[in-house]
Image (tube, rainbow, N blue to C red; front, top):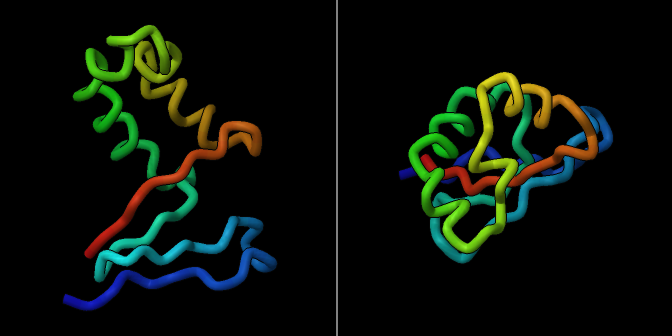
Length: 84
């Protein structure tokens, strides 16, 4: 399995560089609006877990519109692990 493409510079696209991990093929990267559908599906399938202890209420109540807005603003930056 090849490693995912790693962004080394944030100067051209305004995104933080990808962070490699010790796990082969796994990187931590900033989510973008292009990730909105997958991120919403992840939040939707984990609502109970996200809000169980009272934290992550916004994410637990997220709509697909909220996710798109959240990922399209600089203050809403989120990260995810990506693998091939």
